[in-house]
Length: 232
Image (cartoon, rainbow, N blue to C red):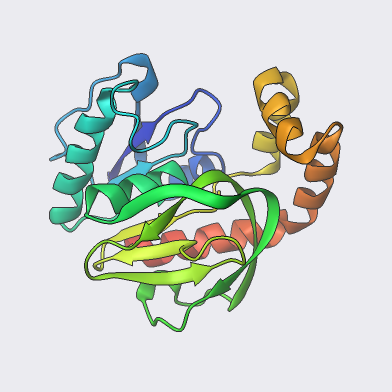
């Protein structure tokens, strides 16, 4: 049986739709809750590494000392040439750990946005449409790619929406893991609603939810296509 290791940074920011996708493929999942002092195990027995999103920033090592250990583990993993998927913070951590630069975005992205593929020909995006509608929630961005990394997609506000580091590591700025269950759960999290309203204004949550619902069928197909490409 294949095994996936997951680095999680917030209670609510979990594998989402990939829980079902990995289960269908018979992949066993072990999750390390780094924000709750979870310990990273030996990486040797795992086939895949997923690094998820989080509200913290890649440079906040004093506030979150485990970021140092996490970045070291990411470097070790990428150098082992096994499949890696980093989402949002996991995308930014991949860039930082492998020698790129992450900084504050000129404009935060929160909600449904359009993303355009680059001209790069990389197996991670085989079969992926040239124009994508995705869900974003980030205030930082990859500003410089790691050495030899390839930019796979961009949006109006963020130049690096997806990147490949070599042939085994994929970073996605957008939240391809979010399904409607994830988004519906935010109504029970006052901190999420406050953060959303601070940026988008009062009453924004129902509007965001309404815009997200129509994209979910194609979004699931996108997640499955990217996963198929990554694991092949």
